[in-house]
Amino acid sequence: MDGTSYPIPLDAALALPHVIEGKFIRFCPQEPCKYMELVASNGAQLRLKLPKHERLRAMQTFKPGIKLRCIPRPKQEAKNPFPKLERIEIIGESELSYQPQTITLKVCQHKACAKKGALEICQSLSAAITPALTTHVVIQPVGCLKHCKQAPNLVISPTQAHHSRFTIAEIPGLLNSLGLDHVSV
Image (cartoon, rainbow, N blue to C red):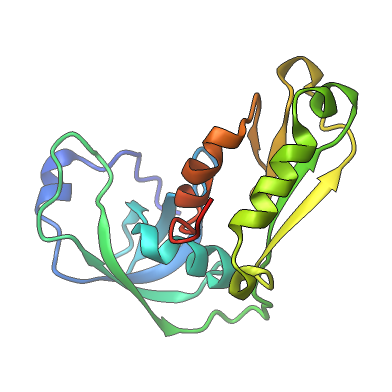
């Protein structure tokens, strides 16, 4: 890309155009469910905050190269260096072939995690996911995730975001970060 550094300058974030068009690059590795990177039509590389109601759709359908029209919120917060979006529209397909991704929540069931409630976490996650979302979200009990001292552990695929010392109380926050906050826990 052109090497533009993050975060974009605050004055640029506060003076955003009414519409940003460009190509999706990737989800940001630090917080994959919240932020995406986009190459705008003017060549600038931007990091943008996804609206909560768009996160699940974005994780399932956005692929590198897909053409997007992003509508920023009219008022940006001065404390947040990354522009928040109000709405995202897909305006063109990527040249790459693509199948929608399923979000997999992998919950370790090895000894240390099992002792600290991993089975109950799987059951609570399964209960929290509505039948309409079961084709897009999979709860998968797995073997050791290699962080036994920080049990119980959970990994979100395809982004590989790792959550240690995960508790049932954190389920609403996790679902919220994935854009699934309308389900009941």
